[in-house]
Structures are given as C-alpha cells and as structure tokens.
Length: 118
Image (tube, rainbow, N blue to C red):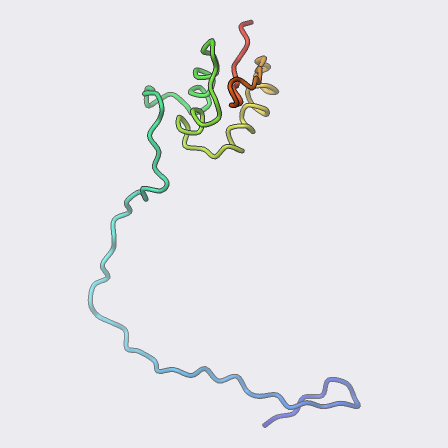
C-alpha cells in the first residue's frame, strides 16, 4: 500500500483503484436497431384541425381570436405545450412582440384568454 502526504505532519494510506469485472468479447452479431416510435405520453391530439403548415403560434392566435376566447386547457391541447409555455407565448409574443390586446377573464371558475377586437 502507498502512502500520500497531505500535510507535512500527517500521512494517510491511499488504496489503488482497481476495477473488478470480467472483460467481454466483442459480439460479431449485427446490432439490432429499434425504430423510434412516439411515446403515447408525449403525443397530443389538437382540439381543432389545422392546416399542417400553420404554426403553433398562429393556432394560438386563431383560438384566442374567437369571441369567447379559450381556456388554458384548450390552448395546451391545440399546441401540445405545457401551461407555462402557453402563458409565456401569450405574454411575450402575442402581447409584447405583436402588440395584440389580450384580455384575461375568469368566467365560471376557469381563466379564459381572448384577443380584443381592434
């Protein structure tokens, strides 16, 4: 066993690091790859059918432009985003960058968002 000097006055023993285990031979069998399938937990079905070239941001604007607006759950289903992401886009992009007047109202116990007519 080796000893290592930490300070001039103290020494402690140091064990060499030895990895235990048996080395395996490399397999000559071809590697099987699994095709990527979307997990059912991460797939979402949009609440409304949109044209595939329409962006998620434009989907949010379309939902918010209706007279009654939309609640957060409808917006989450349409985009597949989490609630904080939807609120962030409403605040940062739709309100601040695009300058659209977004009204937030609590109707029948649920928070509804809509774009006021200009």
